[in-house]
Image (cartoon, rainbow, N blue to C red; front, side, top):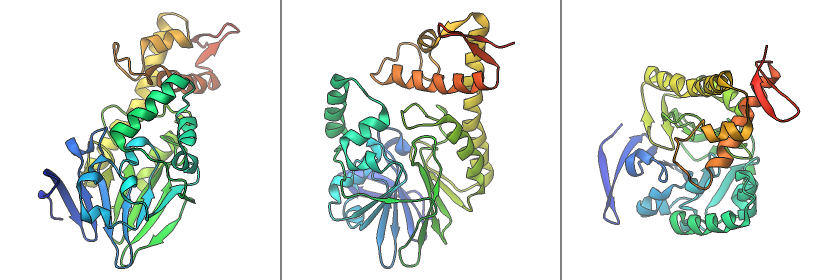
Length: 311
């Protein structure tokens, strides 16, 4: 690995790490949202990229030579460089394909219903993420492989964050791009209409079984080369789910509450953080936890929609 090397493009110094034919070019603050980390693969036959975060706009010819983009999942911050690659093939897991092909598909995946918010969000994405849909995007399935010449990419369907979220493994380098299983202190995000808490639990349990030697996150953490460190941070990330569950149980132990009252208490975001998506994300996240808790009898809900601890 050649780490610490810098590349200057458009007057921006981009840190990178190289693993054989695979390069990771780090976005601002190790890819902290709204940026991300760019993975490039120099196949003998095909030059490929995983996702296209904001940093891709400042890499230059090395990124612009990309012939194939394999999307690990579809969100605005992962599409920010697609506009630079009009001739490249774009491949997306079939469950996320509508999100890539049209704005309407992305809106449905987010679960936005307010016309005003939809219009404002589109303008923001076009301004901040160079957003442009890819109606030419092609769908792939779990287990799909791409032979690049000297390197092979294999897709592992790992849903939860989105319905089509995948981990992309480059062999023989053993580099796994784990996307928005980003191992941050925030914890797993499953607040979109297409997200699923149960799927995310299963994904996190399966992730250590992928035969990787290097793990690359879309955001913040960047690159792991030590398996013990990776597993330790994965355990802390996974634990956030149970911590959120316990937070809900603690709130209900204080008094019965409606979903709306629980949303006011916040599960994900701090009090006073009032971005446009927060209420919807909190509502969907809390609803999924409540569904699990009512199924196993730890919480009961009456006809008025009031939740209380079970017997």
